[in-house]
Image (cartoon, rainbow over the protein chains, first blue to last red):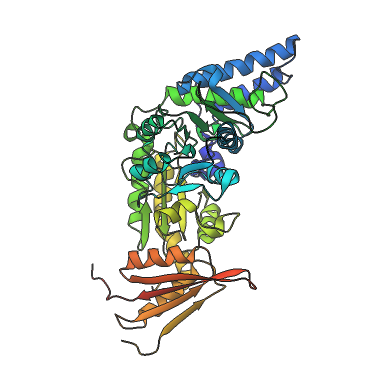
Amino acid sequence: MSEQPPSTHRASRVYLDAATVAPPRTAALEAFRAAVDDGWADARRLHHEGRTARLLLDGAREAVAAGLGARTEEIVFTGSHVRAVHAAVLGTALANRRRGRTIVSSAVEHSSVLHATEHVADDTALRIPVDRTGRVEARAMVAALSAPGVVLACLQHANGEVGTLQPTDAVHAAAREVGVPLLVDAAASIGHVPAPQGWDLLTADPRSWGGVPGIGLLAVRAGTRWRSPEPVHDGTERVADDVSVPAALAAAVALEEALRTLAPTPSTDARFAQVESIRRAAAAVPDTEVVGDPVDRLPHLVTFSCLYVDGEQILERFDRAGFAVGSGSACTASTLEPSHVLAAMGVLTHGNIRIGLAPGTAPAAIDAFCAALPVAVAEVRALLGADDL
Amino acid sequence: MNREPVVVDARGERCPQPVILLARAARAIEAGSLVTVLSTDPAAGGDIAAWCRMRGHTLVSQSAQDQPLAQTSVLTSIVRVEPIRRP
């Protein structure tokens, strides 16, 4: 299957917000369209149309399992990444409710993880601090999860805002010693770095590897105590979700393509050097803080914050210039709260720009962004009357 | 050392205004002086601390006071302005 130019450069726009949602891969869109034609029926039915849908769904599950180093029966498709996270957290808490209510998470987990732990028991949900690069203090996490009454630990594979890799294998080994399951949210990392090995529950977001919206992924290792937190009406399904067969197929096809082209280490991914150029360009802007581990990180993400800059204004400025970028600033969030990740790291949250590169982003696009950056920052500072500070 | 306490009232201001106001006030006073910043923006506390770190000033203290009637919380940050670092 030939790989067409990515949709990052549609009509002269440059999409640089691919951390959470990457443009769907061409092959994924093709698989999606074909499956809409063939896989629309109820996969539980015994007639030809139903069995066709069933075959496509099972094939997708098998392909995803192989890609993640899991067994087919361990893979559960959900309607979204958020629902996968809720199922993982609430389902583990439910199955272990007689053992305790405490859940230990890093302070920089995806907000859906933190909200789910608070939903279970907000008075006992523990947050383990991170260092200035956003890496969790592993010793503190291990100590916390070894206490009595802990039923789940949550540590992401890598942070989706700053890119820092987390010590999931080490924490998993320690958690296993004390019989505490570990949820590894790999929404930011699957398809960009090799999949994590040490986990009891895994969650992922196919949009981040170029699938289509409308599907999430949960994996529950055989032998892990887990129960659906919602009523399941059908003995064959593990969660109460009617999965989109076309979206599942697109997710599987996109994952296969991503894994076929996966760099063996982050630094050998072409995007690693592109991110380095952006880090250098941002560091050269006065009063700008570039955050996250510069080396032990995902290849495709970077975030930096500029003093005296309004996040919303700079986002709009870039958007008008044809660049789609993200931000962790309070003014750009629907909650009007600053990024909890940046706050936990103790770094500047205003004037924050978040970059996520899809595979195949043209060097010219990176150069254009790096050239536009100091100009945009200076203009916004001047607008705020802060250019003399 | 300034005799009058310098107070920056950034209550109701949205980020990055509290930090901009702090930076302007800091520029106008002698090294070693204190600036008190009042803010309500949820990002201001962390950003004032980050500004101190990035610009070489000292965050002396921060404390929040809930204002139930106004349904907000006012953060009081005390910053000591240090001499400008020469690169």
